Image (cartoon, rainbow, N blue to C red):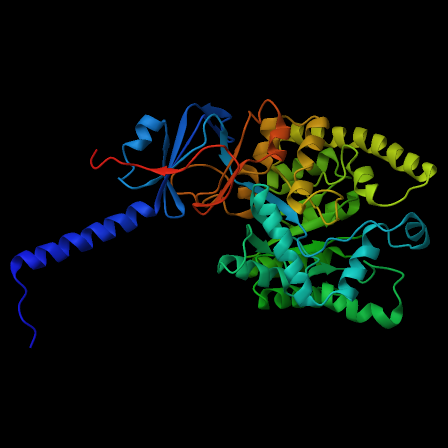
Length: 462
């Protein structure tokens, strides 16, 4: 039989346990101080600013004097000096399981599948699914280190590679942004032409789901849903019928999945709008009338300025180019610049909801995947988008498009503690977003290059 403890002993044990629990609680509390905090939604800048975090959730935002009063003794304090805090960036259009290099000029001229497809096909044929997931883990970490705390991966991931990567990140086995995974892209039968007939079928089956009828379209959505995807990605060419597209959207919405549609020319955009997709990806050929319909229906326009502002020439820096071909690439960039600027102005004028995705799926010489993804900001600015609208496109707007506005996209109480910091003011210089100094995801510091030292609070009461 156990002896009864003296009352003093019981009180002592209780005090020790209480202190231990208090220490555990304080250890999970973080106070972040910074010179400024940008609210993308309103465009206001709080200076100075403090954010109090319990575990993975923001609980209070305000001036340091206001917020520090709620920080318990022993809470971790991160002082970022004069840096500017922002919400974690959201890349709404990624391809994290491919990283092909641009083919040599002679190979570009010999093939009929464009610049991207040869590298994509080599990736599919030359790498096992497991190797692609490990590649994706590297690229995901590089994205996170550059400030992209949330991404939507839209295909080119094998059957379920991005789903497996998402789950590994969520379980803490690998480091990366939180992900929405699309699984296999739904395509028409002629999406990739001119393939060796003996190899075409297995390559296509690993990477895509083909539709040839409305019934096939529903089946494709169900197959992706079986693999627990978060979103359906469909590439609409002129040979996907309105009935097939309507079936895809109807079945996806029955599964509570949003539909992102790769649609470039005017006719394919119209098919996507009529079917009721949730977002138009790329959308280069969109008309003013279509933008107005999208605005009224709440359909998002997702900018993908991957090769704007001369980035296409820079991606080619890893290969030898003839003077004539380099001149042709440069001339193409100049022409695109005018088109890109016109597109930005028309989208902004229409009032349609918009977000921004990198669509980065190439090896970019000299840059990590995150650094390559961040090159989109300068291109948007050169095309006439204001820094504040750019920031909204990768924070608040993108969060709404993903359906995650209750979790991410803003530094507000109740949101997940996803924060980044830059040295200067990104509203004055959008290229600050290419030089992210501090990254926090779910209340955990991923990167801190700000020359300050974290410490703990020493108050015992307040």
